[in-house]
Length: 389
Image 1 (spheres, helix red, strand yellow):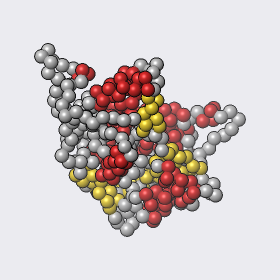
Image 2 (cartoon, helix red, strand yellow):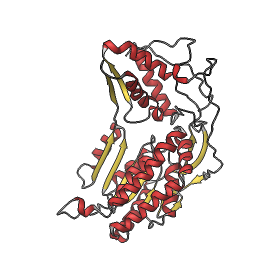
Image 3 (cartoon, helix red, strand yellow):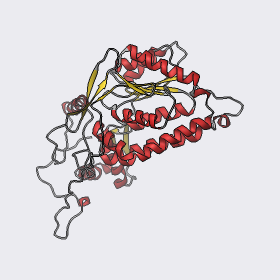
Image 4 (cartoon, helix red, strand yellow):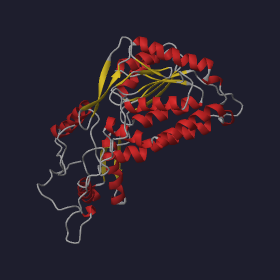
């Protein structure tokens, strides 16, 4: 697809809405308050329902990608810490969690879901501050869906015997779960809720850049009175995730992330009796034929472009358009792109917030530059970018 360079001046898109005098509406700042948020200066590892320092003690900084300010120091786990977490999860599985009837496990899952709902505003703000995604996405998508997953799998916990007639489902044991940075809380819910419903215990390793909603969830675990060791959370670099994957007392590995790391994990568990679930890559193409309703097609394309800053597996990385509708679709696409508001993720008017990390931004710039080097023309709508972040 070839896009032309933006003009220096342009009329306001019709979709902005105009006053009676033809002046575009302007959005007044609408920042979400952070006064009710308490982020600790430092977080330890969450093992056996306690926050404990790593051994040897080591930490790394977690920043707000919108401001580049430090939010907290977080424990950097070691191989010894992985052993501690797996031992806690094994003990909890053997002595407590796997012995509970499904109906009793369900009560804990329902309790977690209700607490997430009660603390939804807190979760939404922490998720936005740590990941850079717009507050309206955290508030309206991520947090409600996370609560819904715990409600849903709570409903399954006492029905597994009916789901598979003639069979007797049982838990696998200890599940090691490694998740990425683009949907920190929602990925956590996708991984933890079904594992707990089936009677497994969990060690979760969130992404190094976005661990804070996971540690807020650890507080929910304690508030819900889960038995110690049922949910454990450790933080650190990718090597710690691989230590967890390779641990001989782990029964199940679940990973969401890049195809390259997925291949490494596949090789690491090959020949073992571990169960493995991988969700890798996911980029796809948008295809528009001449009989498509162009306005609807544009909205589908735009959602992939700006939802979560495009940091989502279903974002279309290519656009194929039938030649007869190419020009009108491109014109509509440019106009629609020009309406997106880039800014403070905590502002309720913001459509596109902060890229999650400097490393991710560098990768995006590298990919854009590679397209330009191969002959593509770049179109960028006029917008004011923040000075920092």
